[in-house]
Length: 149
Image (cartoon, rainbow, N blue to C red; front, top):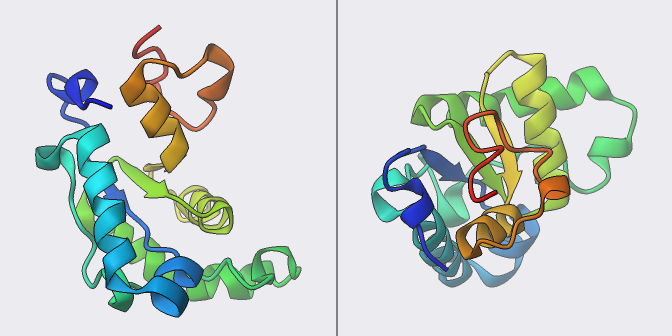
C-alpha cells in the first residue's frame, strides 16, 4: 500500500465512521485503525477529519434499513446533518467503509448538489496497490478515474 499516487494530485479525503462498527461495537480503537489505513492509502497530508469524529461522529441516516424504507425525503432531511458535516471539510471525496453509508452519502451529495464523490475504502486500497481494474472505478471522479491505468 502506498499513497504515492496522490503525492502530486493532493486530492483531499474525509472518512465516515460507520455506526455499527464504531459507535455501536468497537469504539474509538477501530476508528483509529480506520484512520491509519486511510492515511496510508491517500497520504496523511490529504486527510481531513470530520468534526465531530470517531465515536462522536454523526450517523449518516442510511443504516438500520432506513435506506430501503421508502421514506426518502425524511431520510434525506435527517442526512442533511451528515451532508453539512462532509461539506465543511472541503474534501473532494468521502470514504465510506460501510455500503449503507456509501449509498446514503452518495445520494445526499447528488440530492443537495454537494459535488463531492463517495468512494468505498476497498477501492482506495486497491488503487494504492495498483490493482484497481478499469471496471471497478464507478465511484471515482474524473480526477481519479484513470489513475494507475
